[in-house]
Length: 275
Length: 323
Image (cartoon, rainbow over all chains, first blue to last red; front, side):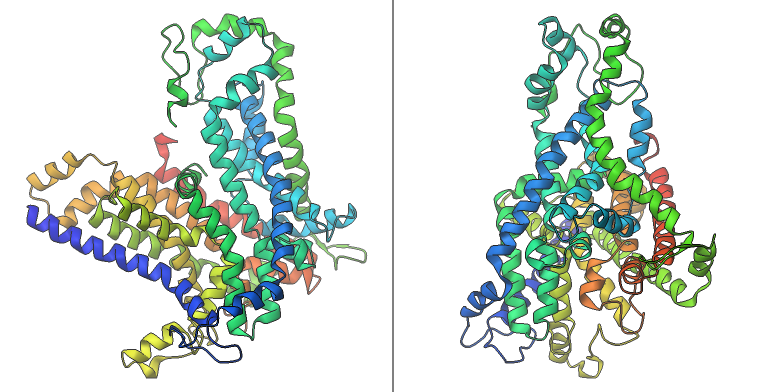
């Protein structure tokens, strides 16, 4: 009995390792291409005899990385804090205060949970044009906040609905009002849920592509993903520079991911389970 | 982290409620004391989120439905055409092909990752908790963290004529089969699908293995005692226990397949011909290059409904009583 399970586990290990290798190959292949001399035609995976690390410096200038980082950070700064705050408030209202008729608001939000962005991007474009916001970062920030609300409120409500009502009763006896109650009691308790939501919204905003290319022509006013799309359009024929630039644009995400990997993985797992 | 709930005062011995349901008896008097107006004031908490949602999702959604009933080039006057645009979506050969493409992608985005994930999960059962396990988890999550655009760029290079895939095939003597995978009519759509498989595989595997580690080992012992082989065991124990996780994997990946845009835009732009064009890309093209806003909107409505039609049954089947 032990024998069969041991050989089975070994097969499983081998599969798992194969999976890890396949996952890493595209990155390694890009790295090997990025290190070839400019103007050569690289092949799949070959360690260069003379690695050209300078290609990354060239790509940094060509991609205008400084401006791109700043732009993405501005967009994230516009979306994430407001998105998390109003979603937490709404989750509190729907899950804990149980406002009368709240289930209608909740059902309305559920409607948007599976909505593909493509289904609303056309009217959003005209809406932004009428507001005079096209080609500004607001045209990415404002719609994203709205589009994230179904998931974000759903997420925070799921937390608040499990908070025992007696908690508020006790605080009310102390004479604090709902506002104080929210900030002093409920927000600290909701910290894990809020942290996961913050990570997810950050990631989705940073990687948002469709809205970025529809709303903003200037790559230096887009998100990282949108800028990468423009970079490919511009340098698509120069494979060496394209790979160097792509890896460079990936680096900030990878660094943030490696620092917060535990929280990221937890948030992504929970996020997909609840979404 | 989970102590958040535990640290809350337990109250007067009332069993903590999970999920909705009616308030427990002793709470009622307090609720009433807050008063009706106080409870209506609670709407102020929900309002900011609802306003953003209403203005940037519900309004555009209503506009999409409205546009879909007109012929409009985005600039001039719009002309009412009723359901003509929908008729076009369902009869035009190109558009039907485009919708079919999205369903073909489901095989690669959903079915293959879930099946492979199940295979690995049933063999591994749990990823070791040591540093090795953390490393495996971290690597398998990389494709979820990077932008899909980057995945598209990396794989366009991998699948190009001088890329790693062809290099590997030449190394094992399959020179005759090498080709520009994304450029040829027969291989382009499966090649795009492979990119999706790469993106989704890690997530599905980890979700399923995590679900697997929660299954009571005594269930397997009982199955072995009854003389069940690995295959019977899989169908009798593993599959039913992982119902919810499989549902989650299918939901996430099917939405990603039907609403795909980034990967296709970057790797093939829908070509060759319309071989890899998907509804998301066609909406973008119709609305912003061909100026057929009405038709683009009708396709958008259809896409939205297709997603709901595919996802709802899965939720019903796999969540059921647990939701």
